[in-house]
Image (cartoon, rainbow, N blue to C red; front, side):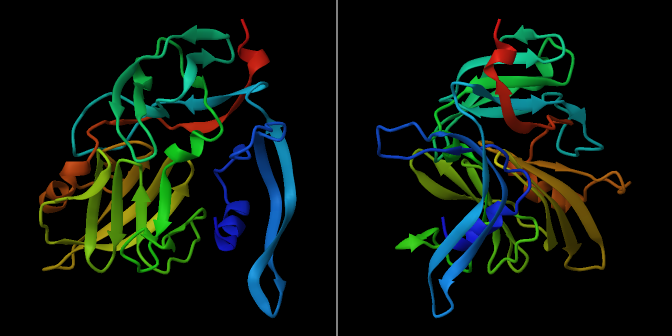
Length: 313
């Protein structure tokens, strides 16, 4: 992580209770979850910016012995999805997650967790779980345990490609964006681990997909609708949301879609905002169909922690 990325992370919303650990050591005494309350990254000298000094207030939130990961879920119906009418509300958790259970805090009820599908991702496999089939009154939580070093591998990432074609160019060429106010030097790329969506306002949307051990281009149908504006509205370890505005190349027509991308997913939810009364234009709809999620529900999930003593039987 660069100093610029760390500085942005310290001021970001949506990154609560981060796993902290020391790789390559048998001493786990300092491992745990931390919350960043405030912080700064400054150059050690005005004459040399290569050395950066990090200062801040970090609060210990707990450890794997005191807490479990908790995915708080409350499925909600979207305003409109022109890609189908599926009623599932899929959430994803790393396949490495163990000791899984659905849990209702108010009543202390539990329900078993069943995966509907496993998806291969660059950071490791991810299991999809349908939150709409849980036999508990919403909201509820998917509680699980996961090693500290496994969790970051599965986070959804918003990249700034900094106008560099390859993610790796000796050193890491792309930069991570943690704030919606991030000033992009290049193209925003949403990386779910299974697909990378390049949101290029000049050349349009392109997609790469992870297969086995490599990334390959996923062909999208051609369209007369051009990506005009990208407005990132949410960035978190489990989801990225944006408003995408498209314009037609042969007219003054424009159209806006809400985009919801989630970690580990091979598809993305493109929904019509409540302020829009017309259906998605056919040419635009068809161009995004290969990566469009057909569900009319969204899980509305948030990643947090829950004390083990609270879920203890």
